Length: 166
Image (cartoon, rainbow, N blue to C red; front, side):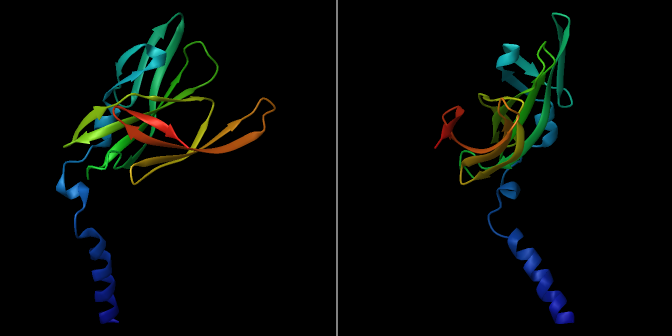
């Protein structure tokens, strides 16, 4: 039993050895993303989130921009773990929420925010992953007859933005 316990301990330690980007470079922190400055088309300006939210009053409506999710992976294949931020824009007189996907590159723990991808209105983001520099997202939406539509989108980083591929 003692030998089995030692073998299990060694197996649990092995994946942590080697070149792990999060231990060899400074990592981006969720706290940084929650208080970062982003550009989103709905607001026609850069906005700085505070605790993951930005609010302003416009034309009698409370416009909000909220960080609703994030995913982590090496977008530019430089060995540093980057972030994908999902921002939701709503309340600006419309009746639906618009979603944006924003790549944030890790520059030794400092964020380099790139251009947003407008994912559209009224979608559900089921998953978002980065595999060998490719972003793979699973989404759900409805058609005009309220039938559920499931689809996948892939993106790759090109210069300062994500570009749809397929």
